[in-house]
Length: 469
Ligand code: BG6
Image (tube, rainbow, N blue to C red):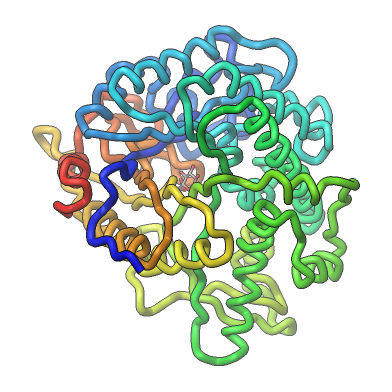
């Protein structure tokens, strides 16, 4: 078959952020509260309310994107800026904010890539009817998305429906759930998951009926797992892990089906969601037309005998899931180095991930997140020497090109993140950006933007269309 030794001239070199991680202004100009805002009301790790102050610095930030040479910018819309209650009245100031951002991007020839919902679910919908646990959530999500398509669809061609649904359904606070009954939370999570899949399919239907020219699909957290050894038990466990972590959801999105094995898994645990007539047909009829892929690390998997005790702390972690008695356990991979947060760095894993997705689902792919969280150090004269990030990105980009050579249709790459964002779990200590934001967790300093060494390197990568790595 045709062999590619370089990236397509129209390859979309990008970078990404999400609303709650960069905008700040959590209660300004009529914005309603999201589940994230509620969770972070009494911050213990960082001050989220200002984030990276992007809400007040749009022009400056887009000018930096243009200087970097971005072809595409991935950002999310805060649902509660548009509909403070999640449904009902529209907040015109919120609508105007994204209108301005989109126009600024287009003015600089940067394609907007919009995530419709990235973790910051409206708290009011949780209070009105329990949020994603209720089927009422389906229509509210669809009509919010329809509003976005009608308002911005003349300028935005690429849309991401839900960011990392698999994480949302396993992190109780993201669903607005409280308490310690993790088993029950997981059971409810599978109902939320089903409702989100129906909402996604209905939204894709609306998108197509409106005749919007472009592509739409979920942003998935998807990464290949490796068996920890060649023991058949570990190989089996790794297959199970792949199904339970990733493929159950992709099969729903792309084929409208619960695989037999996964349905049995749900039945054995009393986790089966209630499904209405027509739900699966709808998903089958309106699959995504592209996939956004978030990839940070791979995982090594070994068998976890049912008789083995969970190590302390695992019961809670199992929600993610990092271990499940009788099924699998994530273990260290001694072949790989890890980040300061223990995320194992595996560029070849990205190539494997892309090939797996291509073989199973055969959709165009844009990498919507890939990056390295690190303790960056701002030195005198505003220098940040993040050579570790450059090397992380370089090795992953090489593997993207190899995957394209393998035949996978990858049309864009967005490192996470354009500028430093507040990390959901680790605040400002864990930085991801190409641009440094001068603040600490509780000392907001002057928020000035500083180009890291990785910014200058990525600028060359884009200018040479991936030749100069
Ligand atoms: C993804 C999210 O899960 O991973 C991002 O979509 C997030 O919002 C990123 O920032 C990195 O995770 P963390 O916990 O290090 O911020």
